[in-house]
Image (cartoon, rainbow, N blue to C red; front, side):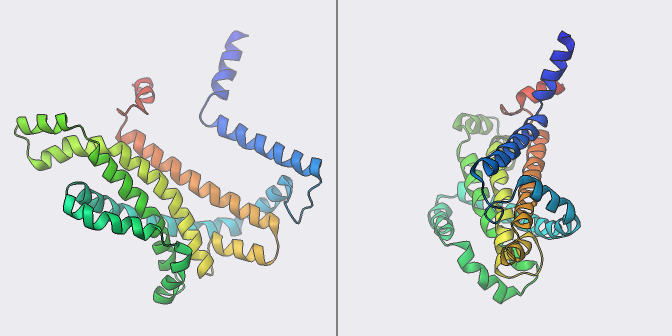
Length: 267
């Protein structure tokens, strides 16, 4: 009997079951609020109606979600390709930091929805404007976190490397980069979720495909179940991409304090 209780407790404490139970609780609460306050379906649809719409429109939702995912991954890849080198440049040069960093901060104060139409004018209605919009939102967190990571390296570690006659490249690869990786991955997790938002912003402005385009159609037809179903799929995309980055982080830096317990258990 105690063995069964222990097994049940382990299942309930697993990282997969807890989110599922939480989402199920939210659905029950959602249904209860609608029933108690008698909210009409044209304001908030019932959870069962959203689930039925997910089943009925799943092929369409899947095809549109792939378009949004491609744009998200493209913008996220550009954020990594440009963000990390620029952040290293800023972290190792006070001159570059004084000139470039304020410009980056200023660029984030410009609403992306305001400049997104320019991307459509310049690049048309293809996937390129959506990738650029995703890049614009995902770029800044990568830069900020990477700069913070390289600036938080302990000076004693650098002094030790110099005393051992290590070259600048060796110091970077064996000390600076490993110590900055936790901050870099923290920025990547924020970046990938914002890239999803950026891709949808690009689809809102000018597109004939993607989850953002589907949301516009549902809004125009006042189809709230379809709108909530599209939002559910959009949230699922963000969660899956976040989990993917977290898995890569666990594989690359199992020695970090946030993963040390998992690494010990695996060993």
